Amino acid sequence: MRAEAIVETIEVCKSYGMGEARIAALDAVSIRIDQGSFVAIMGPSGSGKSTLMHIIGCLDRPSEGKYWLAGEEVSQLDREQRALLRNQKLGFIFQSYNLLPRATALENILLPLLYSRIGKLNADDRLEHARRALEAVGLADRANHRPHELSGGQQQRVAIARALVNDPALILADEPTGNLDSASSTEIMDLLGELHQKGGTIIMVTHSAEMSAHAERVIHLRDGRVERVEENGQRPHGRDL
Image (cartoon, rainbow, N blue to C red; front, side, top):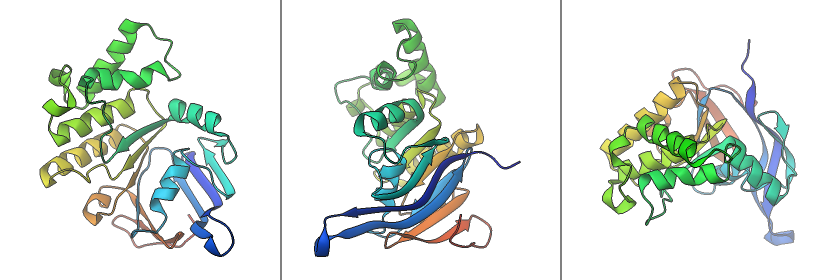
Protein backbone atom coordinates (compact mmCIF):
# COMPACT_ATOMS: atom_id res chain seq x y z
CA MET A 1 0.00 0.00 0.00
CA ARG A 2 1.37 3.40 -0.98
CA ALA A 3 2.12 5.83 1.84
CA GLU A 4 -0.03 8.90 2.28
CA ALA A 5 1.20 12.11 0.68
CA ILE A 6 2.59 14.65 3.13
CA VAL A 7 3.17 17.21 0.33
CA GLU A 8 1.37 17.47 -2.98
CA THR A 9 1.43 20.39 -5.39
CA ILE A 10 -0.61 20.68 -8.59
CA GLU A 11 0.59 23.14 -11.25
CA VAL A 12 1.96 25.53 -8.63
CA CYS A 13 3.17 28.87 -10.00
CA LYS A 14 4.76 31.79 -8.21
CA SER A 15 5.42 35.11 -9.88
CA TYR A 16 6.63 38.50 -8.73
CA GLY A 17 5.99 41.90 -10.30
CA MET A 18 3.60 42.80 -13.10
CA GLY A 19 3.64 43.31 -16.84
CA GLU A 20 7.07 43.31 -18.45
CA ALA A 21 8.67 43.26 -14.99
CA ARG A 22 6.92 40.01 -14.06
CA ILE A 23 9.27 37.20 -13.02
CA ALA A 24 8.07 33.60 -12.84
CA ALA A 25 9.93 31.94 -9.96
CA LEU A 26 7.90 28.71 -10.25
CA ASP A 27 6.15 27.53 -13.39
CA ALA A 28 3.56 24.73 -13.08
CA VAL A 29 5.38 22.61 -10.50
CA SER A 30 3.60 19.36 -9.65
CA ILE A 31 5.21 17.10 -7.07
CA ARG A 32 4.15 14.48 -4.54
CA ILE A 33 6.20 13.58 -1.48
CA ASP A 34 4.99 10.68 0.63
CA GLN A 35 5.05 10.40 4.39
CA GLY A 36 8.32 8.86 5.58
CA SER A 37 10.33 10.07 2.58
CA PHE A 38 13.71 11.79 2.51
CA VAL A 39 13.76 14.09 -0.52
CA ALA A 40 16.38 16.60 -1.68
CA ILE A 41 15.58 19.61 -3.87
CA MET A 42 18.48 20.80 -6.03
CA GLY A 43 19.03 23.40 -8.71
CA PRO A 44 21.27 26.30 -9.73
CA SER A 45 20.79 29.81 -8.40
CA GLY A 46 17.46 31.16 -9.65
CA SER A 47 16.01 27.69 -10.26
CA GLY A 48 13.14 28.23 -7.83
CA LYS A 49 14.22 25.82 -5.10
CA SER A 50 14.05 28.40 -2.31
CA THR A 51 10.68 29.66 -3.53
CA LEU A 52 9.35 26.10 -3.57
CA MET A 53 10.68 25.53 -0.05
CA HIS A 54 8.96 28.71 1.15
CA ILE A 55 5.64 27.54 -0.27
CA ILE A 56 6.02 24.02 1.15
CA GLY A 57 6.93 25.60 4.50
CA CYS A 58 3.85 27.86 4.47
CA LEU A 59 6.09 30.93 4.51
CA ASP A 60 4.48 32.04 1.24
CA ARG A 61 1.59 30.94 -0.94
CA PRO A 62 1.42 30.23 -4.67
CA SER A 63 0.16 32.71 -7.23
CA GLU A 64 -1.63 29.85 -8.98
CA GLY A 65 -2.12 26.12 -8.42
CA LYS A 66 -2.94 23.97 -5.43
CA TYR A 67 -0.90 22.78 -2.46
CA TRP A 68 -1.89 20.11 0.06
CA LEU A 69 0.03 19.63 3.31
CA ALA A 70 -0.81 16.45 5.23
CA GLY A 71 -4.10 16.21 3.38
CA GLU A 72 -5.15 19.83 3.99
CA GLU A 73 -5.46 22.24 1.04
CA VAL A 74 -3.47 25.28 2.15
CA SER A 75 -2.91 27.27 -1.04
CA GLN A 76 -5.07 30.22 -0.08
CA LEU A 77 -4.61 30.37 3.67
CA ASP A 78 -3.87 33.83 5.04
CA ARG A 79 -0.74 34.75 6.98
CA GLU A 80 -2.19 33.94 10.40
CA GLN A 81 -3.56 30.59 9.26
CA ARG A 82 -0.22 29.65 7.69
CA ALA A 83 1.62 30.59 10.89
CA LEU A 84 -0.66 28.31 12.91
CA LEU A 85 -0.09 25.46 10.46
CA ARG A 86 3.70 25.93 10.63
CA ASN A 87 3.61 25.67 14.41
CA GLN A 88 1.44 22.57 14.29
CA LYS A 89 3.04 20.51 11.54
CA LEU A 90 6.47 21.79 10.49
CA GLY A 91 9.99 21.82 11.87
CA PHE A 92 12.61 24.08 10.24
CA ILE A 93 16.39 23.67 10.09
CA PHE A 94 18.24 26.66 8.61
CA GLN A 95 21.76 27.11 7.28
CA SER A 96 22.47 29.89 9.80
CA TYR A 97 21.05 28.01 12.83
CA ASN A 98 18.94 31.03 13.95
CA LEU A 99 19.59 30.43 17.64
CA LEU A 100 18.98 33.14 20.22
CA PRO A 101 22.51 34.18 21.23
CA ARG A 102 21.78 34.91 24.90
CA ALA A 103 19.70 31.78 25.47
CA THR A 104 21.11 28.40 26.45
CA ALA A 105 20.75 25.37 24.22
CA LEU A 106 17.86 24.14 26.35
CA GLU A 107 16.14 27.54 26.30
CA ASN A 108 16.42 27.71 22.51
CA ILE A 109 14.74 24.33 22.23
CA LEU A 110 11.99 25.28 24.68
CA LEU A 111 10.87 28.30 22.65
CA PRO A 112 8.68 26.49 20.07
CA LEU A 113 6.79 24.73 22.86
CA LEU A 114 5.36 28.06 23.96
CA TYR A 115 3.51 28.47 20.65
CA SER A 116 2.75 24.91 19.58
CA ARG A 117 -0.25 22.61 19.78
CA ILE A 118 1.31 21.19 22.95
CA GLY A 119 2.11 24.63 24.33
CA LYS A 120 -0.39 24.14 27.17
CA LEU A 121 1.95 21.68 28.86
CA ASN A 122 3.11 22.80 32.26
CA ALA A 123 6.64 24.07 32.72
CA ASP A 124 8.03 20.75 33.96
CA ASP A 125 6.61 18.82 30.99
CA ARG A 126 7.94 21.37 28.51
CA LEU A 127 11.37 21.09 30.12
CA GLU A 128 11.25 17.30 29.84
CA HIS A 129 10.28 17.52 26.14
CA ALA A 130 13.22 19.85 25.50
CA ARG A 131 15.68 17.67 27.41
CA ARG A 132 14.62 14.61 25.43
CA ALA A 133 15.07 16.48 22.16
CA LEU A 134 18.55 17.60 23.19
CA GLU A 135 19.44 14.07 24.23
CA ALA A 136 18.21 12.77 20.86
CA VAL A 137 20.87 14.84 19.07
CA GLY A 138 23.62 13.82 21.47
CA LEU A 139 23.98 17.11 23.38
CA ALA A 140 22.46 16.35 26.76
CA ASP A 141 25.68 17.60 28.40
CA ARG A 142 25.46 20.97 26.61
CA ALA A 143 22.04 22.01 27.91
CA ASN A 144 23.33 25.14 29.68
CA HIS A 145 25.76 26.26 27.00
CA ARG A 146 25.01 29.35 24.91
CA PRO A 147 25.56 29.33 21.12
CA HIS A 148 28.97 31.04 21.30
CA GLU A 149 30.14 28.20 23.55
CA LEU A 150 29.23 25.57 20.93
CA SER A 151 30.87 24.55 17.67
CA GLY A 152 29.02 25.07 14.38
CA GLY A 153 28.07 21.42 14.25
CA GLN A 154 26.78 21.53 17.83
CA GLN A 155 24.74 24.66 17.10
CA GLN A 156 23.14 22.90 14.16
CA ARG A 157 22.34 19.94 16.38
CA VAL A 158 20.57 22.31 18.77
CA ALA A 159 18.66 23.72 15.79
CA ILE A 160 17.65 20.18 14.79
CA ALA A 161 16.50 19.45 18.34
CA ARG A 162 14.43 22.65 18.24
CA ALA A 163 12.87 21.50 14.96
CA LEU A 164 12.01 18.12 16.49
CA VAL A 165 10.64 19.21 19.86
CA ASN A 166 7.05 19.59 18.61
CA ASP A 167 7.08 16.20 16.87
CA PRO A 168 6.41 17.76 13.43
CA ALA A 169 4.81 15.92 10.55
CA LEU A 170 7.50 17.32 8.21
CA ILE A 171 11.07 18.54 8.69
CA LEU A 172 12.30 21.20 6.24
CA ALA A 173 16.08 21.59 6.05
CA ASP A 174 17.38 24.57 4.05
CA GLU A 175 21.09 24.04 3.24
CA PRO A 176 21.59 22.48 6.70
CA THR A 177 25.33 21.91 6.18
CA GLY A 178 26.08 25.12 4.30
CA ASN A 179 28.06 26.73 7.15
CA LEU A 180 29.82 23.59 8.34
CA ASP A 181 33.15 21.92 7.68
CA SER A 182 33.19 18.51 6.04
CA ALA A 183 33.39 16.52 9.28
CA SER A 184 30.47 18.41 10.87
CA SER A 185 28.50 18.15 7.62
CA THR A 186 28.86 14.39 7.69
CA GLU A 187 27.69 14.27 11.31
CA ILE A 188 24.60 16.35 10.53
CA MET A 189 23.70 14.27 7.48
CA ASP A 190 24.13 11.08 9.50
CA LEU A 191 21.79 12.54 12.12
CA LEU A 192 19.17 13.41 9.47
CA GLY A 193 19.53 9.88 8.12
CA GLU A 194 18.86 8.48 11.60
CA LEU A 195 15.76 10.66 11.94
CA HIS A 196 14.53 9.37 8.59
CA GLN A 197 15.16 5.77 9.60
CA LYS A 198 12.99 6.37 12.66
CA GLY A 199 10.10 7.44 10.43
CA GLY A 200 10.72 11.16 9.98
CA THR A 201 9.77 12.90 6.73
CA ILE A 202 12.51 15.26 5.51
CA ILE A 203 12.71 17.70 2.61
CA MET A 204 16.15 19.23 2.17
CA VAL A 205 17.26 22.05 -0.13
CA THR A 206 20.92 21.69 -1.05
CA HIS A 207 23.35 22.67 -3.78
CA SER A 208 25.62 19.74 -2.91
CA ALA A 209 25.43 16.48 -4.85
CA GLU A 210 27.34 14.84 -2.00
CA MET A 211 24.66 15.87 0.51
CA SER A 212 21.78 14.97 -1.82
CA ALA A 213 23.16 11.42 -2.05
CA HIS A 214 21.81 10.86 1.47
CA ALA A 215 18.24 11.36 0.23
CA GLU A 216 16.05 8.67 -1.31
CA ARG A 217 14.98 10.96 -4.13
CA VAL A 218 16.31 14.15 -5.70
CA ILE A 219 14.07 16.71 -7.41
CA HIS A 220 16.07 18.86 -9.83
CA LEU A 221 14.68 22.31 -10.65
CA ARG A 222 15.70 24.62 -13.47
CA ASP A 223 14.09 27.92 -14.47
CA GLY A 224 11.19 27.32 -12.11
CA ARG A 225 10.29 23.89 -13.51
CA VAL A 226 10.95 20.31 -12.51
CA GLU A 227 13.76 19.30 -14.84
CA ARG A 228 14.05 15.70 -13.68
CA VAL A 229 13.65 13.45 -10.67
CA GLU A 230 16.20 10.87 -9.62
CA GLU A 231 15.74 7.89 -7.37
CA ASN A 232 19.13 7.43 -5.76
CA GLY A 233 20.68 4.26 -7.13
CA GLN A 234 18.07 4.06 -9.88
CA ARG A 235 17.56 5.63 -13.28
CA PRO A 236 15.86 9.03 -13.43
CA HIS A 237 12.19 8.94 -14.23
CA GLY A 238 9.85 11.41 -15.87
CA ARG A 239 8.56 14.84 -15.02
CA ASP A 240 5.29 13.72 -13.43
CA LEU A 241 5.81 12.62 -9.85
